[in-house]
Length: 384
Image 1 (tube, helix red, strand yellow):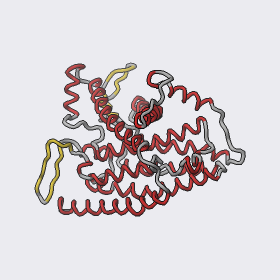
Image 2 (tube, helix red, strand yellow):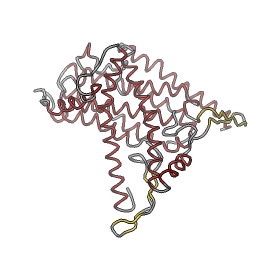
Image 3 (tube, helix red, strand yellow):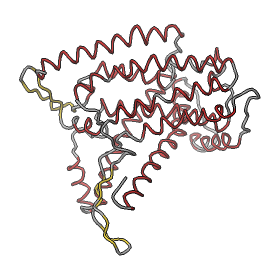
Image 4 (cartoon, helix red, strand yellow):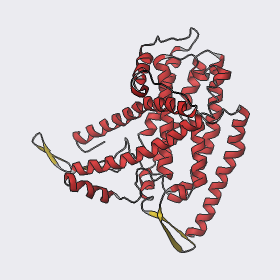
């Protein structure tokens, strides 16, 4: 956690801030979804409470917090109350392992009559060498929240939604894991920070002993694994229960599926969990295939030098440089989240047998084929 109390305190605060960032992004995504769906369907959307309906978010928050907390008479009370927490926590824990920008270098300074530093703070909650293993393992625990909610509600529609959710998430987790095998073979590491470092500079690769460079394209993973990126993105829709994969809720058949009996703040936690898994999926796509926080044509040293000419070299310049790259990450993340919203209001819901056939008979063979083709190409390209 750190070598002194200052570093420990900053690292703990960093985890809390990243969690709050994710939570605070949920109302903005809800607003964007409402306005975006209205735009797609040629209607107004929220426009009464505040400019562009922005204060509707505050009104909804007040409603969720103060709404009566209802618990069905036959429900398993402890599990019923625990389910929303179990649905939210995995997404929050997984998001803390995603690199959001370059590390922040803090130079030595004097405070309270004592010398502190220098420090290097990672712009992420927790840095680990096997970050992708941790994220996939923690994210998969979200299925337990849906199962607990469906069983503990003592409602047949909730139980059917929970069964659908478990079958769907187990089916598509297989495709999700296999879809990134190709990119993992290319990078040769589970470290997300190392993956981003490998995507610096222009597109370059070796084949049959020759080196090739395409200077006008960034060295992003999507140019090496376009099929893998598409398959991984599709599986993320299923893992986050977004249309056209929202069979666990399926209002036309199951009322609201696993969260039929939930309202108020408990319902809000399910919303946060869903959007949290969307952010984790979009963050992984950004990290694997879109260069993470990297900016094409600009290096860390270039940005720091430009900023240092205005504010001077030092900790402030390092912090502003990290914020610039963080904005780059947020822009890519926002674009992918908008695609999540766009697809929801464009495609119809799958029939359940179509959903399962797509996972087992289409996506799974394609992910296996992608991994096999990648291995063959790497064998001839690198001679390994």
